[in-house]
Length: 139
Image (tube, rainbow, N blue to C red; front, side, top):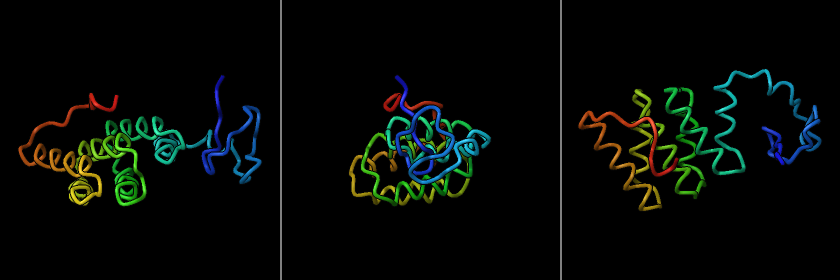
């Protein structure tokens, strides 16, 4: 059975709802959004695997619009290592100066694993290594 969520407040919904009963968000508006916008919203989904998938796709699409969201996630209260890893990996694939800012900030992250991964990605970029399309460690 599928579980449906409001893309604004993440309340569980009935599949036939047209408006979120919790926050009043018009769900048909969401259906009309461009795919990139839906992915940017999904970066804050309640299910970590959805956040990981959204980050991976945004990175593969080289979405520069995702970079500010990635920075918010790195500087925010996200604690799931795999989500943070997916965000860093995605940011590294986007050829924009902000990716270095995100990776540099992540080298100071409270999680040693996150900081180490950010350093590894920065080293790959400085050596002009191509970043793989998919991270084998996050799916």
